[in-house]
Image (cartoon, rainbow, N blue to C red):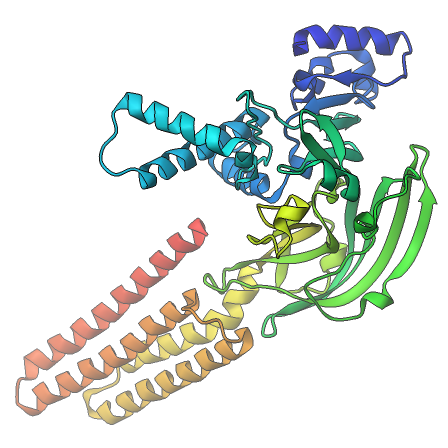
Length: 511
């Protein structure tokens, strides 16, 4: 059913007061579907009037997608500036699968193959591998190629919360290569045709930042105080096999925590929601290690990341998705202690940690692609305050540069004093650079500010050479030429400074 056909039927049902379950097709699982009602008076009065509570099926839902799909989606957004559709994800899967088959055939055969031979060899490859191809490292993880060579794709069920489609609280994840014995021992669901799936719990999650108390650049780490919550479906009471007992959504760890104990986390609130979900709210404070990038220092941007993951159950059992959209804009209160930083963006999304190894149990667990742990990620983008950074870092260097330039105008009888001033300025610059590096820790690469210092030290050497050359010419009796050399030294000095300032301004505008 197309969107144009589904929209009037849904509008009629809602206006008639129907509140029962509605399950739609993939056309209703698109981001554009709620826009079909934007001009209706009920929708303008209460956004989501028509779509709230509606279920829709789709092969891919990005909020609960696996690590491969999330990585592809990030690349797709960077290239095309919008979210990929499920067709784009599966087209990428198909091309990856085709490329893998072509590569395997090319490696197994010597010499050139005619087009007809290529078709025969590729068909033989697909027949010989069968459903095992589903276990390859594909982004959606759901291309099934059984003996009849008919595509079987997974189905994800989404539910509208207002106008936003989110993964429903229970999903079925296909487990390639599983058999009847594994299904009985591991509580898998029989999909028919020799295919099995595992029940996956979707946990609506969120994090609210109360305060960033400190950012320690040298460590590197930051200290934060925050709330985090989960909302998930109640257990259905079915007795789970022993291997499934650890699939508890609350058994999480904070892998970046360096100070503070998980035992100190406070359960602030818990309740049963009207929709049948369980709600848990915790309060936490701790110091977390964090990676900082100083390539553009002192005009750098940094990202503070808070994340947790469930180390007891892989993502085929539990997946954490963003609960709901937060109000727009950045709240300044949590960042009041960060006088040198301005918060520019906040992002919350699912976090996935993936290994390439099945860790010794891949075949038995249906995890031939490796093991993927599910978690949640909260990140804050910070921009260093340019005025403060330039004043503290570049102003002393600018003053020393002016002193050195002024020394070039000393009378010719003060050559010794001129050289002494330049050497003193150079040593002072060395001390300032060492102080900056000490504050940033061991970066291990060249910072943007270091290039400025390299230009500064080059000017120091150039000034000394220029002054001494003019003095040698003067001592040799070349009186007009010594004045030309010193003037050229001053002019070149000023030109380098102007070019450096211009280059810095252009680069900072691009950053």
